Image 1 (cartoon, helix red, strand yellow):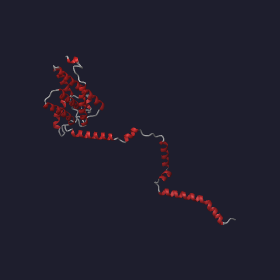
Image 2 (cartoon, rainbow, N blue to C red):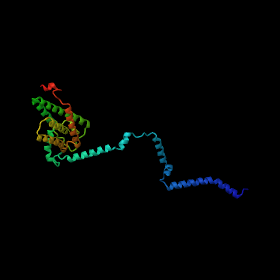
Image 3 (cartoon, helix red, strand yellow):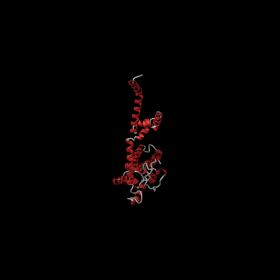
Image 4 (cartoon, rainbow, N blue to C red):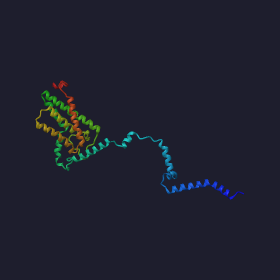
Length: 271
C-alpha cells in the first residue's frame, strides 16, 4: 500500500498542467472582460472583425496604387490655389465695378453714355468708316494706311472670335444682352473684343497719323474709356478686358510685321 505522501505527490504532479491551463484561461478571460475595447479583445472575440480583417487582407493584394494625377488632385499645388484666388478676386472686382450694369445700379443714369462709348469701339462702325476712307482716298499713302487699318480690323475679328470659341467663358451674371449688333460668338466673354480693338486702333493712329497733341491725348483717353465701359456695363470681367488690351497690342505688332505696301500688293495700289 503506497504511502499518503507519495499518493499526494503523484496526484499533485498529475494535476499541475491542467490547473495551470485553467488558471491562465481564467486570467485571460478576466483581462478581456475588463478591457472590452482592447485590440486583443477586438481581434480575438469579434467574429465580425475577424471576417473584415480576412476580407481586407484578401482584397489588399488586388488593389492598385492611386495614379499620380489622382494624388495631385487630392493635394492641390500652389499654382492651382493661386489661380483660384485670382479668379475669386476677378469675380469680386467685376461685381464691384459693374456700376452701370442695370438702370437701377448706383451709376445707372450714366448707362446711356457708356453705351455710346461702347458703340464707338464696335467693329462695324470702324470697318465701315475705313472702307469709306479707302474709297475716297486719292493718294497712295492714304490708301496704304487705310488698307492696313482694314486688314487690322478684320484680323482682330478673326482672332478674337477664335479665342472666344476656344475658351467659351460666359459673360458676367449681371450683364444685360442689349449690345449693338451682336453675333453668335458674342455670347462669350473672354477676351473683350472692344478692348483688343481699342488698344490696336489707338496704337495704329498714334503711329501712322499726324495728330496734334490734344487729339493724341483724346485717342488715349478714348481707348481707356472703352475698356472701362466694358466692366462698368457688366459686359466683361476685369481679366477679359486686361487680356484683351494686351492682345490688342500684340495684334498691332503683328500688323506691323505683315504690313501691306505697294511692294507686296502692287496691283491694288495702282488702282
